[in-house]
Image (cartoon, rainbow, N blue to C red; front, side):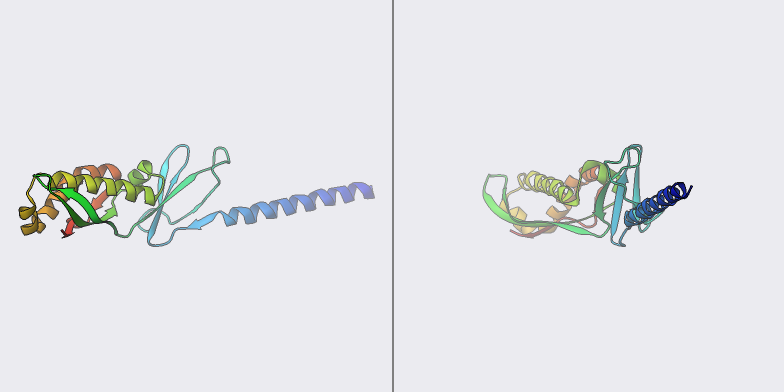
Length: 183
């Protein structure tokens, strides 16, 4: 009888220890999203954004290897960010080569769309850089270098109009006209 009660006490103690370990492990998975970020959490059934301005700014980051409750997370900034193209090689209408410095300023307008398109913020910046480069090439190739140098502000508006249709598909918007800084 004494041996059975010792075994029962050992089982209860082991269960309490395992329960305590599981409780503290679950607490370690709790995430509080910083004010300047949005975390897009993707489970097998849906995508939810967490952060300032959303329904909640806390969630549990269950490892993706756990069936049914596992998730993946994409972290994106809610602040403005810049795409800088220093010394970008361009051509004018007559195929005269020259270097331009272009700056573009963006913000993420739809975090769920952005998270579905890319796996990280660095990848998003690479994609946006390619979009801006294409716009710069397209717009500048239709004009002569003299005209480009005289009317730089007009070309900033043209760059912005060129990229605008593509940005909505990435969940991003331009916050001001793309700037032609230097030629």
